[in-house]
Amino acid sequence: MEKLKIGIIGCGGIATGKHLPSLAKLSDKIEMVAFCDIIEEKAVDCAKRFGTPDAKVYTDYKELLKDESISVVHVLTPNRSHSFITVDALEAGKHVMCEKPMAINSAEAKKMLDAAERTGKKLTIGYQNRQRPDSLYMKTEADNGTFGDIYYARATALRRRGVPTWGVFIKEYEQGGGPLIDIGTHALDLTLWMMQNYKPKYCVGSTFHKLNSQTENQGNCFGNWDPANFTVEDSAFGFIVMENGATITLESSWALNIADYNEAVTTICGTKAGADMNGGLKINGIRNNSPYILRPDLNAGGVAFFSGNSNEAPADREARLWIDSIINDTEPFVKPIEAYTVTRILEGIYESAKTGEAYYFKD
View (cartoon, rainbow, N blue to C red):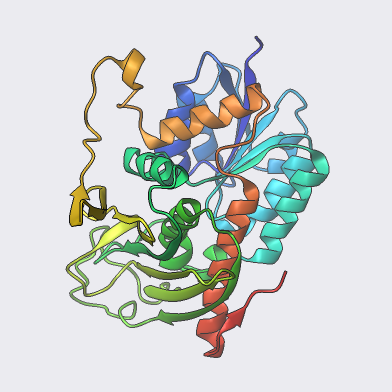
């Protein structure tokens, strides 16, 4: 079988820290033949480290898309450019993996969704937290009906002091928002996926700029931030009601005075049982008229042939399943319509925070 040729657009931290190392482990199925970044040195470095000997380097992504031998493109740029680069890549006949979030707003995400449907090319979004062992175990239980009707959930992405100070993370124009769109998006994706509920009715949201103006005693794990450039929120919270009445609370922060912090986790409560990921996966319910808590041993191994590859990192599994979906012509693990709904809800929370009123979703 001829290897899939992949082009990389965006050669920053998410490329070198996540996507490219995972793709490199699939050398029997793919080869990275082109790298593009507006900073040429970054593309050159990635080409040397991860590319084929004759890998090409670009500073204009449209030139990369002209290469008809490339069938897959990874869009790993700042949020603002996700939509138009993805649409152009789909129109050029490429399958696209776009890093989360799907886009900075629902209108831009809808353009991506429509382009994928129009071209018949595959599109997926990089929600790798679905591939964690605790996520996969909880999802299996949810699909098997263990929890019954899930009517309340809590999506949590709280950092005490974890403001990303590199790149353009804290600049609203480039990113479209702060912790809500950056890490809150992971927690919300996990929650909707567990509930298998993608029909929001309305939401209420609040965003805060309480700590981002501080100049001293920041205590940030990534080093001090520049208050003048910190134009996004430092925390955001939402209350979401779905069409069937199910309710979700969403908590996100990069900087918050909280001791009980946790990132990209979900809690679900159903009519038969519940589950949470706080301090490890726990499933709770009533059995023999008594409460119980089940803590699955997700580190249990054995023979990999029988028990699966328990050592496979979430990013590696994400990359493998994505490439396999192209080779086998199956649906991507993360469907674009699911990511589109996540973007709609995030946008609704931001809009509610601006207006001070509930945001109602329209079909």
